[in-house]
Length: 139
Image (cartoon, rainbow, N blue to C red):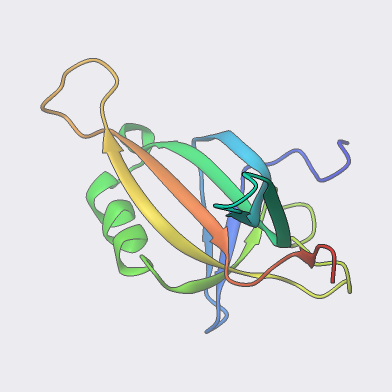
């Protein structure tokens, strides 16, 4: 078994509904830093003010492998910009912050794409971003 699990990702809505993200491939699973850069117009020096980091998780879902691709797409579309708990692997734990609490994620984007024919949207890219900082930097 891997550190975080071996099975496909899943999400749990705030209403406790579990949705498995089958037939998916993880594209991105890393932090995204929020840093303010101020540049002095007098001296030209740059000053960096780190605030914290969000966690970004992206996966590509092969909708054409689903028994009912339209129903699955409609499920994801209904969750767009909603808060959910993200499990990188359904046999693992939810993503946690530095305090050990489960982190709420927002489904930030649904990117429709295709594998072979451009008029078939059979690939869906899901982008999750943590709704709050995973941890703070320099504070």
